[in-house]
Length: 472
Image 1 (cartoon, rainbow, N blue to C red):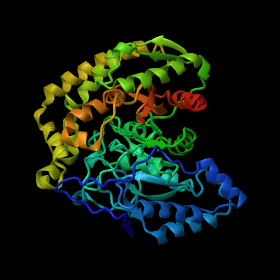
Image 2 (image 1 turned 45 degrees about the horizontal axis):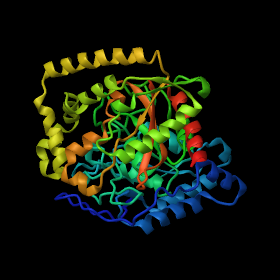
Image 3 (image 1 turned 60 degrees about the vertical axis):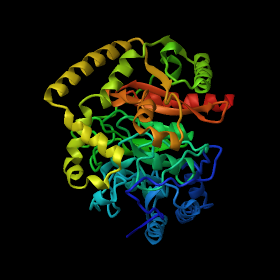
């Protein structure tokens, strides 16, 4: 029923497959481009499916996809779309997309980048099913850091993906394949997840847009949990508009999801939004002065187009430190405890060590961490009275694949410096491309808002993306 995209797993050590050096993302047609072409008869969903398959075949085993739907099945789906009596009723008619391989799609293996863990579900995750019901065409399942544990994209038994900016840079994780499928122009959007930054770090490293909604707006039913209380289904796209269309389709209350909640429209004009900016001395770039200069240059543009206020960063980063230095690591182990015990050799070593580390926490640690997090949430709630959004770097620096493999824990901590606290503090966020450093690496701004401020941050992301493009 399915075919793998030439990716042979090797559980002994993650293979590094070099890919051609690239100057950055090469975006394919947008959702609106495709819909317009379909309406005019210039293109059909079959044409799109054939183009996507050709692009995937041309790249070969580059670490983007784990499973690609069989050609005949995709073509049948495209032809079914072409027989629809009224395509205008389908907001995603004939639009191809990818799904991170921690979410279920009926008939496709769910592997979490661990072949020994794989199973084939009978049903599709509701959030993904809503896309399919709206006319979208699922191309397949994308690569990830194993068990969605990591922000760097190297923790996989499949070929290690690399950033489209070349220079040996990592693609970011855990949603590495979802980001690359978009940045390579194969699909206009992909479904990902974000527990500690996985839906924002890979887009930042590939020059595209990543959106982490407020937890509960997109159903997590059919998602194999990383940390069930923090997990969030997310979207990655090349353009902000290609986030908002699928988000509108996917956002719905799901009473089978214990964390579900209803979307709250926000009509605050962008010009009235107060933007919180920390003092530059509070920002951490880990010795990467080139990245610091590039971030401050991008941030200066924001000061020209919106009202800004000073915002302390300390309560946010203090919350982030709880994620991997606190008992939430134990929550990861609850899902995979039996598998870790019975199949330890099937797990990438650094992932195994992280999961097993959860066993050192007890109930006292859990309550102490919850109390500390409650204190920090109260501090942050006061800050939202003074600002409407907070703007930070998405990442403070970049790493090469070799640097990450040499020091996997420390580099991962650095990559999550600005993202680890997002779900702990119940925030929503969008990572937006903001140009390049002088040595050709991607720069990304992150717009964060309180829970249910999703419409606000998406509107700002669209406005600021346009301003940054016009400046460049």
